[in-house]
Image 1 (cartoon, one colour):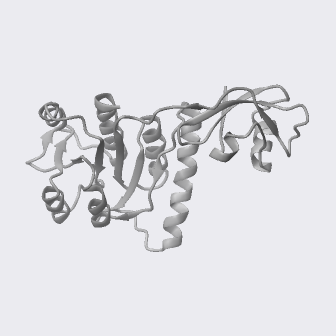
Image 2 (cartoon, rainbow, N blue to C red; image 1 turned 30 degrees about the vertical axis):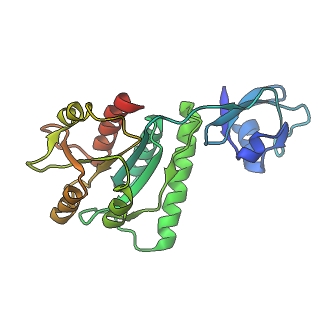
Image 3 (cartoon, helix red, strand yellow; image 1 turned 90 degrees about the vertical axis):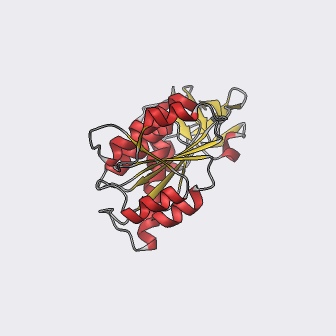
Length: 248
């Protein structure tokens, strides 16, 4: 079943018309025709089955709802990925996989040791818009009715100040005091189920010494993923798989 993201307002209508870009995608790319069924979702948990009307054209796809709007409950745990921005298309890949693994929010971080630098606010907004498109496409393809919130790229200090409000923070670290992730989770299973969990992933060379100290001061759990040094995007997916199996 083909899926397409629309606004909540459009989803609630009995009849709607896709914009020109969406219409061309349906007819020219997906090769859909009148009478074909598609699922529309709003990225906030709601979805509904629609049918392409007879009068639809490649430039104006008219859709008619044929079922009730369905609502999917959000995950019991609000899982946040706070990852240092990796080079090139690696961040796109990270966000795509994060959506597939059920994250609720992505916070791109600029650490002191990050190779990627963003100083222009317009550039930061452009990157967020791109990552939002990546997240929307990933949600459409994997069947999720939720699209995670993508924050603007921000400094480590700003991100930590905000994320310190979450129930628990786990941060990958290459330090001697880092505890194996499996041991940290075994220890924390005696605690109540967290409402929110942040998984922080540093740059290739790890967080800077002062950033690691800031994490300790924020009562973050410094954890190790084993003897091998993983790329930023690999560590991000590793942690999300573990946390997802634990709480999602």
